[in-house]
Length: 179
Image (tube, rainbow, N blue to C red; front, side, top):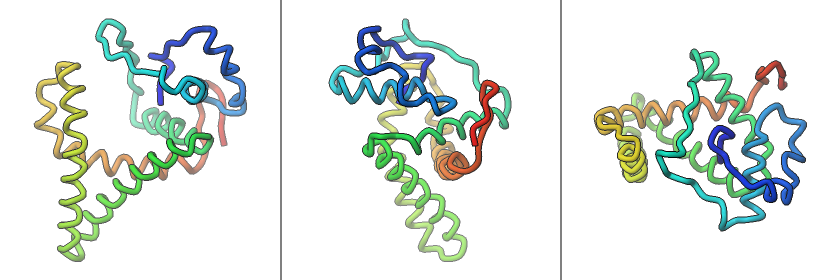
């Protein structure tokens, strides 16, 4: 996955994979679908450059409505992924987060589900901590450990909601309406 704001490639690579061909019917996603094609053709040559000197900064969505519209647009592209591995990984992540949220809700009806919730959330936390520690150190975020426990539960709820919300209905982006 990628974002056009931080994407760099050689013109020869762009030409070799036929650039943005094949996704003109979509209102957005040219950057991501280009990366999928590049990754397929050059699987060992695509990488992430973790270097502060080349970081790009973009403005966040201005309000909750724009934020949700942006996420809907991002998720809606997943229906067009040709790489089944990406779809599989996203589905596993969604189902896992759904299990966490569902077990939390069911815990109010039967306390044993709180054990499932605690186990699921603990596994999620243990799996994510090394990643968040690395990124937080890189970005020099000092207090992330304080908010992480609550944030990870909110993240599970967010993933479940956006996964559903992004797959239904259309959106409007840069003057284009997608149904």
